[in-house]
Image 1 (cartoon, rainbow, N blue to C red):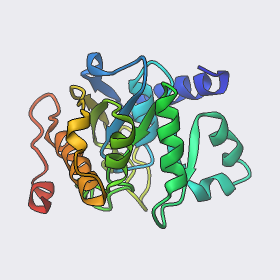
Image 2: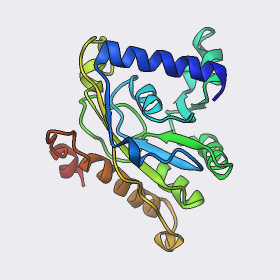
Image 3: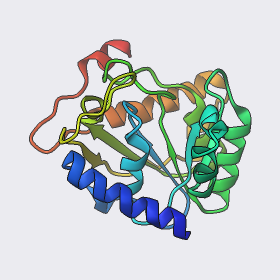
Image 4: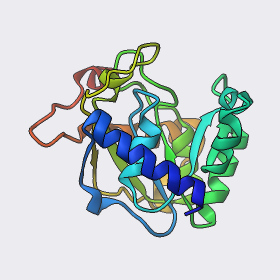
Length: 217
């Protein structure tokens, strides 16, 4: 773990625990060694650091390309394993970079929805993660984040002491046989399978599966 990543990790974990009553469950399911994809729902700017502090070893993240243009934030992002991605369209450069990182044995964070939810409900999956899985066969660790939308919704203000919880599900492993048919449609189906698994994860105490997402399928 590089020094700046470690400082950010420790700071984020402290802020999450003190400021948002952060809790994590199912961490025994995390693949800490070798290539793996940490796949989670996406509701807030808080989500990447929440996934990061739930894991013990360092991860690689995707971040909006425009954030790197900020003279203060940009240099820091580059040194904490963040990779620029163009959210205005299909960014194949970012996809290739992630594929190479996984093939080198690194672990990455991917949000199958592609961008933050405006309502807090789980959105439709995009085919990107399906393509990455097809090219690498990297195992996927599904994670469901609860409360980050309430704590910091898109376009809203931060609400301190609003509790956030991360629940980790059992890894999903794919085989070559799962990709006999290739192309966007096949990738989309794999992406939807991953997101359906995420949506089915319950918070301890019985958080229901997103009915809004069920209606989209």
